[in-house]
Image (cartoon, rainbow, N blue to C red; front, side, top):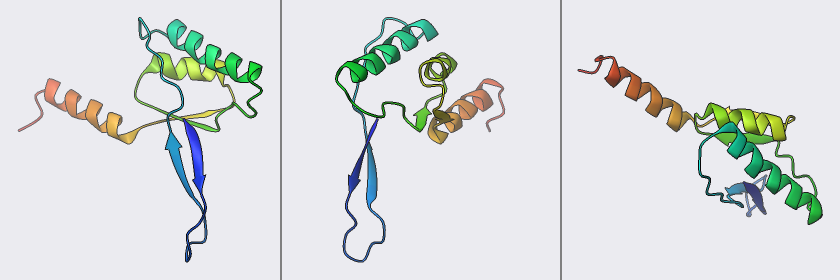
Length: 102
């Protein structure tokens, strides 16, 4: 994701930041190795294209442990957090699987 900073409108104190996906990757498998390869390719390309500051300060993910591990490996200084929507969705599926829904 990249951040686009929109200047503050009149009456606003701070600019608005909008997250925009900059890279899409179609992978054969949802494995840590696949994710690591894809993320490392993006990082390497950014280096050859002289794109500064490729390490994202925050990375928001769904609940895939393999992706979390790959991000931690390629971008060790990034803070990884999980999207609350997917967390809630996983909890709801678990409630249904345990037969706790009425």
